[in-house]
Image (cartoon, rainbow, N blue to C red; front, top):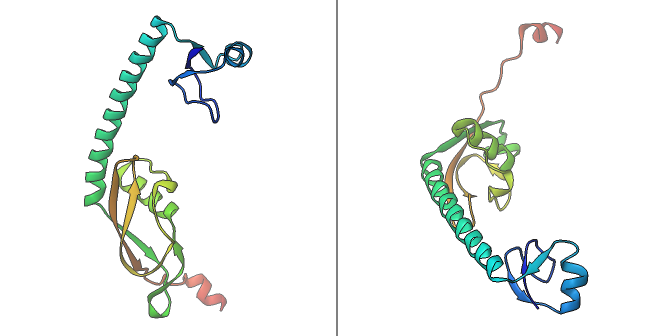
Length: 161
């Protein structure tokens, strides 16, 4: 029996797929759980309209991601951190810190998992960091890690010592 899947079914099909399945599987499992419907001409037309809408939405998202990638490509993120001898920083600069700084500078929320750091940054200097916006669009951001000026102790704290 040919069916159109309405939901993802693990290891069988994804939503929107048209597949041939066993009659009993369709009647006893897929139809009662509303995971699929019989592939009638009207359902096939709905499927085609849904695919077209998905393609338009995907194209719009790709275009927005490309615009965002251009903005991020021009962006230089400057992070000030405490550093010790030989320009080694205390701790590290993580993808979460970079995502926070991108949000602060641009106003766009970037998921920390989309910042593709092989490992956290542990040295001062300039680093190129890729940020994956969609599966086809990746932006490269310049991250400059600088030594923070040592903060003077408050006068009250000096008196205590």
